[in-house]
Amino acid sequence: MENKFTGTLLGAAIGDSLGMMVEELPIDEVIEFYGEPVKDLTVPHPSSPSYFLRPGENTSEFDIVMLVAKSIVDRKMIDIKDIIEKYIQWFESSEIHTYVDPHFLLAIQSILEGQDIENNGSTVDHALPSIPIGLYHYKNPYLAVEAAKAVCMLTTRNEYVLDVASAICVAISELSQEKFYLPDENEYFIKHLKNFTFKNETKHYLNKVINLLKEDADYEKAINELGNGSFVLEAFSQALFIFLKTPHDTENVIIKAANSYGYYGGDTDSIALIAGALAGCYNGEEMIPERWKEGLLKKEYIIDTAEKLFEVALH
Image (cartoon, rainbow, N blue to C red; front, side):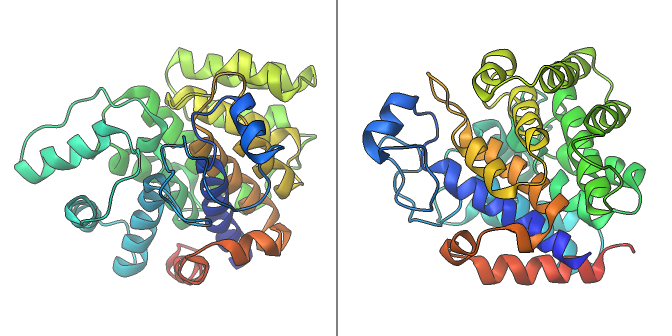
């Protein structure tokens, strides 16, 4: 089971780091610079929003995942006050916040100033705390959902974000226990996730994933049908489709997700972060290529956090 925890965080980190290299770039610019779809942790494209990051470095999206994971490890529980404090410390640090949703930062600013937050942050960034929460509550998806919503509501009240946060943490908790035999039970798995969502539009996106998988749609069609932007329903459904297309092949999942830019560019780091977390959780750490693990700048810290998260999780 511990290798599922490590696989989740490493998969998320690698997906984020590979995807940030080509974020918001159309296919022609990617091919012109790299010669092929990206497969290794190298320098970001000069036009990527994360152009200044080093190979194997992570973006602010993955910082959010690790902040919540670290809080759970430190407090041995989900402590909203501690998560708020960690958010504020991160917000006030001198490090550049690489292209994170401005509404996420504004929400932390509002917390700092004692003001009410707005509910208009609809990007996938807000749902990312659900990944470590799904691990912590892996035995009880219902508790995972309540905790994920509570944490995500620190930065937005958007109902689509809360739906996706619920779906992500349930997916992580169930995949960690191998409760579904994928891809044979893809449809059953997605319908299970739908049970934890409330908005019709969320269910509509999940139904589209089911239909695309049933017809064995290619990746390009999925981008056209689902979208690949930072809007929470687009990024999550795209990541879910890519994972369920080849659920046993972590390497392929992460490569396809990182290269989900299409003709106009997309939120490839967030999509690959989520897809990498799902594949890493389902297949475990050992299915992640060594070249990627060795290329991560914070590999040891990520592994250490995952192991400690496993120790404090509710078994």
